[in-house]
Each structure stands twice: as C-alpha cells, then as structure tokens.
Length: 458
Ligand SMILES: C[S@@+](CC[C@H](N)C(=O)[O-])C[C@H]1O[C@@H](n2cnc3c(N)ncnc32)[C@H](O)[C@@H]1O
Image (cartoon, rainbow, N blue to C red; front, side, top):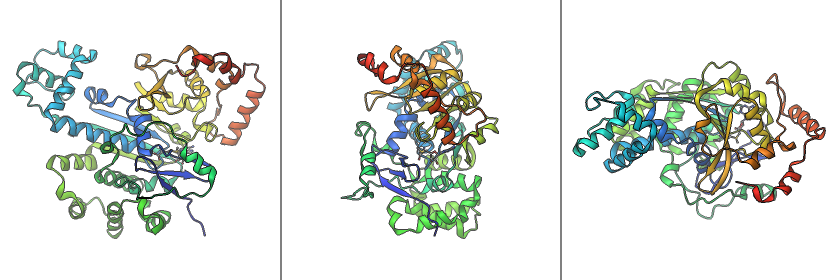
C-alpha cells in the first residue's frame, strides 16, 4: 500500500522538524525548525523598519514545506503589532528608533502639520511628534495601521502533502519528557544532531505560533486548494496515532468540522461558532479584530503546488521579500542556478531582498552574474555569518562580501549551475556542473582556502 513517507521529530526549540528519506536530507535541523526560520529569514529582513515605512508587503516563499517561514513572518507581524499596540513604554522605545532612522528623520523634518493630518503612511512618524509635543498625547491609532496593512504571500512547493500538513503541525508543546529521536539509523541521528548554534537566544513566545495563525493558514489553503478537504494522505496521516503528538488537536477538529460542513467554511458564523468553543471567547477584542481582518480581508495567500521554476515563469508579480529555502545546491541544484536567479531578478522589487541560508560560492557567484548585489547575513545567535542576501539596491547590504569571499568565487567552487530552459532535471544539472568543474583551469577551492587560512569567515 502506498504510504506517504513522513518522518517527523521534535527539534530543540520544541517545534517539529522533518527528515526526508527520499532526498536523504533534513528539512529542518535539530537546532530548531522555528528558530531557524527566524534566524535565516525573519530577523535579517529587519521587518520593524519595513513595517514603519510601508502599508503592504508581498512575500514569495519558495519551498514552503510545512510553512515555517511564512508562519514566522505572520507571527512576527502579530507580535510586532501587539507590542506596538498595547504597550506605551514599548511605543516610546520604537519612537526613539524612528528618531534615529535617517529616512524617518527626513520625513519628520519635512512634515509640517502632522498633528491632525495623520495619513496611513505617516502614522508612526506622527507618534513621535505627538510624544515630542506633549507626552500625554500619544493618542494615535496604530490599530488603523495594522488593520490596513496588506499582506500577500505566494507559497510554492512541489510536495502537496507536506504543504497541506502545514497548519496542523504542532507548535504549542515542547517534546514529551524523555523524548527520543524516532530514528534508529545512526547516520540519520548524526545528521540530525549536527547543530548550528546556540538555541537559548530565541524567545519561546516568538516561536509558539498561536492557534489563530494556523487557523488563518488552514482557511487560506482551503480557499486556494479546496482539494485538501478530500486528500487521503492528509486524512491518513492526521488519524495515525503514531503522529498525534506532532499535530495540533484543535486544528484537526476544526478541519473535521469543515469537512462535515462540506467545505462551506466561508460562512463566518459557522467558523465563529466553532472557534467560540475552542478558544475564541478568550481572545481580546483587539485580537479578534486582527484575526478577522487577516482571515477575511488583509491577508492574501496562495499556495502553489508546482515546481518553483514553472510557477514563476507564469507569475507577473514582483515581491518585497523572497525566502529561498531549497535543499542544498548538491541536492536540489535546479533552484540555485544562474537561470533561476535571473528569473527571480524579474520578480524582485527595486528595494526587495532575497534571503537564503546558503554560503556557497557558486550560489553567490550565480546571484552576482544574474545582476544582483550580494551580501552576507550575520547570525547573531551563532555569532557568525550564515547565509546570503541578494538585492538590486546595494545600499541595503550591511555586510558585503569580503575580499576572501570574492576570491573564493573565482575558484572552482564559484562555478555555478546552469539550466537555460528552466526545465532540466537535478541529475542533469549536476552532471553538467561536474563536467564543467573537472574541465576548469581555475584554482581549486581547497588550495585557495589553504593559501588564505587566516582570512576565512570574515
Ligand atoms: C528544506 S525544505 C523547505 C522547508 C520549509 N521552508 C519549511 O518551513 O518546512 C525544501 C522544500 O523544497 C521543496 N522542493 C524541492 N524541489 C522543489 C522545486 N523544484 N520547486 C518547489 N519546491 C521544491 C521540497 O518539497 C521541500 O519541501
């Protein structure tokens, strides 16, 4: 009998990670699936700054998997809003930040009559001005900002089952006591135990995605992919006792409720009646508003079950943020080629940013050749550079590639993958790359690294 190969385990921050036997690779390291999402994509994106200056964001989540990157973004958004909305003290801290921000100082100085004319865009600058003139008057309505902030996420993955499981994945409980990794195979254990940093730095509260976030994702997936309601893999996996600890029971019951309703989930009262039973009554008024506006109005989410190359060829959008979370270039080269990056170039806003965890010289070189400015990502938790940022605007690069990195790009390690028609199989891309490396007259990376031993990781 066909069985979807599902290998979940708990990672060190309590979030669920996956191993893929067919790719012989992990989707998430034991370090923490949710923590990783924050460190690789959310923190480097400096979203506070973005939120201050914009009323909408378009995100492309390439390799959605079980959705950590999109969920972490949404969770950050909800937390940002919460901090901002409810806590006056925090509000004034933000104001200071605004004050020291050049862009905003400019706006601050340029605005003449801001006391009353608060337009959406200036609402945060106005907060500063209010507090300057009379600190009792921080009577702004940040809820207006929040309720009008528009989010569009396009999520792409080839694995339908995995993407459909996303809203069910448990993110509320830590691993059970005496939990052991569910793999006997030693090499898998080793792979999983490879750690990448220090896991104490991320706040738990940030990582625990609230139920409402998963409810929102579930509803959006049902909207864009209604066949989830009759998907037999999902049904089998959700009802398998062995996996129960990895799924969120409330979301599973909500899903069953929808199925009974025959997918008639858009009837608001039905959803509210259901939510009321599980937790809705405990939500504050503000929270309900947020929840409803994301659910029905401000959050546009599309899940595409497709090869990212094919999906993007037909896409006419451009994005502010692109998360590229493919398996490593050696496993999934088709999403790291020069040609795929050229395609991404056409989908990136002028001030947009592409984030990836890869430090590979071939990846950086491909980004450069596709026309991007390229920088590094500094991971504060690990205290080192981990990952690459590609953008059209070089001013957005905080950590440029060092001389050492640029030198590495000129070695054989910098030879990038090619896929002109954006249709080649991974094996073919790897073969072609291997031949090119073998025939290259460039210096080998190991020789280069030896020669420049002291300059690495700077
Ligand atoms: C490292 S995992 C991503 C983990 C994910 N971001 C998460 O939060 O769970 C890589 C993902 O890439 C997907 N994938 C592989 N080849 C792809 C392709 N050509 N286009 C789109 N997705 C692909 C796999 O199905 C897998 O889910």
